[in-house]
Image (cartoon, protein in one colour):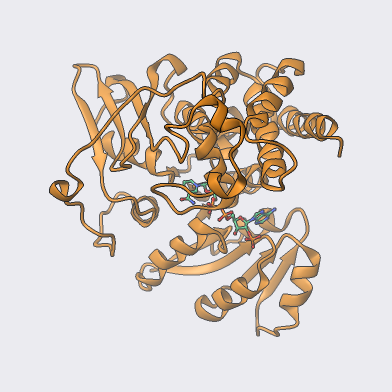
Length: 383
Ligand SMILES: NC(=O)c1ccc[n+]([C@@H]2O[C@H](COP(=O)([O-])OP(=O)(O)OC[C@H]3O[C@@H](n4cnc5c(N)ncnc54)[C@H](OP(=O)(O)O)[C@@H]3O)[C@@H](O)[C@H]2O)c1
């Protein structure tokens, strides 16, 4: 029988690629629900094609416009709890969370608490609320399947490896568009330049995060929670070709890597069909065409977001929550042209410095720290 799947963030980069994976497997998946932020046009097209039973939009105005389309038998949800309501449905087996930002925390938790398996692209969930989410995964005995290509790579490398044999995780990073820029050049980069990622085609926020290397910092924290590795055993390596998606070093010194062309449909499909491997439309890797694979250490001085993430993880408690919240607001301000590229780490550092962390936070502490981090940034930005 086909698995009932819900896709949160169906109109985004990951969401549309996930629907492409699902479209090719009609016997395996039945789309029960789709959730979007504000893109009514695309959501309506997806509803026409996949005929879900329920759909949600973050904006009330968007939901009203969707209702005017008169889709028969479609339940339309809106409001702050719409995604949480949707994921609890009885006919749902698997939830793919591809929403961007901390908006993904509560739906992820609602899905886990309702006993659903979760395929997680929304890394901000684990960065901001890792301890609470992992406790819930254990308590409700569900699967949390990584979609992020690096974490999928690690997950793939670890199949058949005992828990005690994982010594180190090595996350690769393309280095983004400013890998070779000087500090002075970084002060002057434009939004357009920052949005031109050399190897991946992604949503706006993660593309800016890749340019600052905060994306890798968020992934360090994500890896810590997913694979239970301490920060000093998570290494970041710049690998401009984006062919080696990440590696693990095992207790005997053996290093295992996962390679492939840069196409998110592969990690998405693996998360959705795990533990099975099925054929996919992804282009095959030709090592001779790629020719060479380069690796170098990241430059913490030019890209201070990466050490800030390590520091927040080491500080623990609600510090990563504030790091994430401050980053979301700073990235948005940069994309709106209100601050410069190098103001992003400066603002995040200031937010972390003023934060009085809560150790062993519960969900309420996390939501408070998230709000506090945002408010601090809004005050600094004068909005
Ligand atoms: N893109 C990648 O290759 C990639 C790779 C690894 C991990 N990820 C992670 O996957 C997540 C999604 O990234 P993306 O690149 O797909 O982002 P994106 O293209 O910006 O898409 C974000 C999606 O979230 C929806 N959304 C935003 N706010 C929402 C809200 N409050 N309620 C409901 N839906 C909301 C958007 O809806 P509307 O467009 O309708 O407003 C859109 O469908 C991020 O956490 C990112 O870090 C992405």
